[in-house]
Image (cartoon, rainbow, N blue to C red; front, top):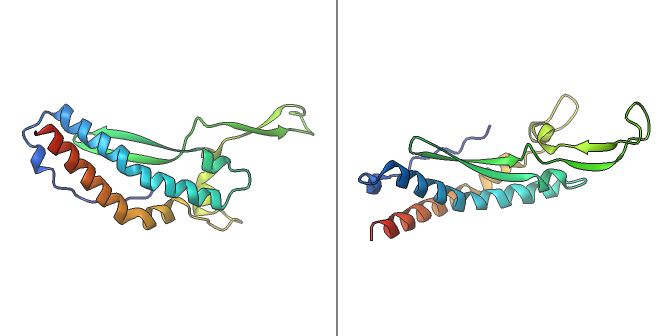
Length: 147
């Protein structure tokens, strides 16, 4: 797991209902996380063999008590087929590829595999632009609500 934690001053939203605050945080997080998501996809395309890992990258916004979290990575429901098995018990059946099951090996490496970090590298390169976009989106949404 890659953490990018930063505290943002939300004192302007003190008088608002929790649902409105969560909506502002969720929408702002979704807008700002697009920057990181595109960087992750570009990094994943750089180490592509078939491109399934890069195509499976998605984002999901979760809200907890006044905290919005962007989860960026390969979607677990993304499944593609790559040819058919030619030998063994599964002969003739399609070869199924699930990038979510091997993304951690690409990111951190394995016993005989060198790590090729695509998530951590994207987070490091886009950290400043992500935080500035998030702060701008929150301020814009708060000012439109408080009009």
